[in-house]
Length: 295
Image (spheres, rainbow, N blue to C red):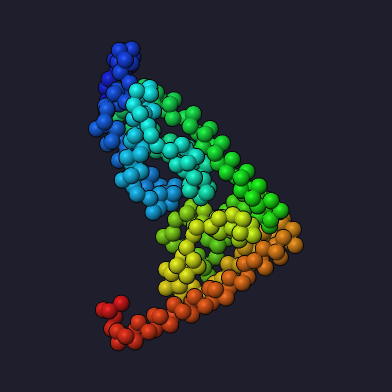
């Protein structure tokens, strides 16, 4: 795939002779190999892999291959996929922006380097892809503006909107991670995904239903934690950290009180869910006679 021992002169000669970047990278087989390696890298990166949850990875790879084939063929190939906005709408909803583009672009470059692709070809590919960063940035900003227009004069807006809430979520999870009473619940958890989920939930909760939330129910989303003993006492600890986080960010007390009034009713949901889980566990144990090999 455009091996690194090829001279710059050879690359220039091929380009002059009309060979597209797609051809000079090695064509179909080489690009498919690159896409496979590229997605293996993306899937291992916790900063971004939650974006691919519940996605058909085979379909995603095929789409990526078709897009790259088009992008690297000077328009000689056809591309019938959706626009960036249409194809990434769900991801923009999850907080996708240009910082994630930078992470993905870095993995793309590292993928080509690992395959010993000539640096000149890598630079040429990057020159084609980099302008898309501005598209992702603009689309993310447009999504934020659309959300702001929908949530104007809501608590979400009065708390400072998207940037302020994301700052609060970062500070909030820093506090949770430092508290030994609860941080064991987050062991082996993708913290980036967790923060994105928390942001989406709070955005929804503080927007009077004007924002969308597509996450799981509290019972479904915390099933593993209820199995670990999560209950309303842990809710109280988390809620106190939430309040302390907002106070640390100098949020007006009246806004904090308004936020607490929205969140506090969830305590009963956690209490009930924990009790239901325990009852189901006890009923299952009774059915199996408490035999350890039946669990």
